[in-house]
Length: 281
Image (cartoon, rainbow, N blue to C red; front, side):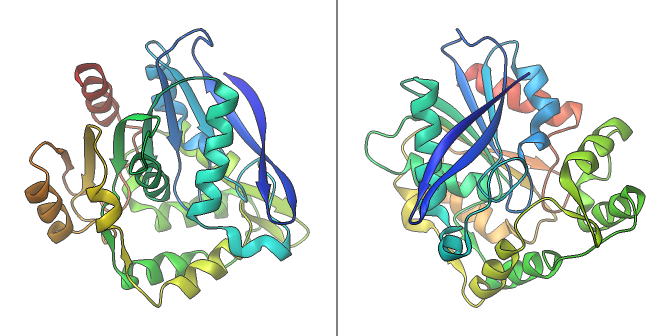
């Protein structure tokens, strides 16, 4: 694993976007893995290790998360899809590749959809992990609730909070839990807190006044797609999955039974399914 940094541009100046890279830099097959709203690129460590045998795997920390810079207060409203698309375009330019495959969890999938829907998109294949063409305002409100800043005396308390907040991760290994906790929190004078700009939570709670309707964007996508669905998810619901499958019979669906938002992609069967789909499409 190697570390890298690329510069993004916001209305007030530049910001650093940190990323990690797995596999050979000479490999023309590139997979970009983008995390969820309040997460970071280390969420993909397990699957990146496996896929790096066949891919050059790139796992960024989106701006405001992990080791990337936070946006200044004057630009905080730009914690939004247009800024993320701009940042990822800068990252792709740094990689100097003509096309990439894209694996996006939740918010990372929305960024992927936005890029894949554009003319001459560099995205060749798109994997959407528990995100679809519609997200209800109720689901957004639920996400906003757990993004309220919290402080913990130690990482054991932080781990207990994560286990309660992310039930979709209940079956991952102890080592995976340690990685998530180690990289998902930062130490402050008030205690350990989640490793992202708390402004992101504020913006999410404001956005929860409306549904997120991405149907027009999703319908414009032409590349092959795999939809991973935790069938107990409140973010990707059964009616949305059904409509997406009805509208696009070529859409491949991977149903992860009994799992809420989001499937971890850290379990052997989930990793194997993703690897096989990428290999055969």
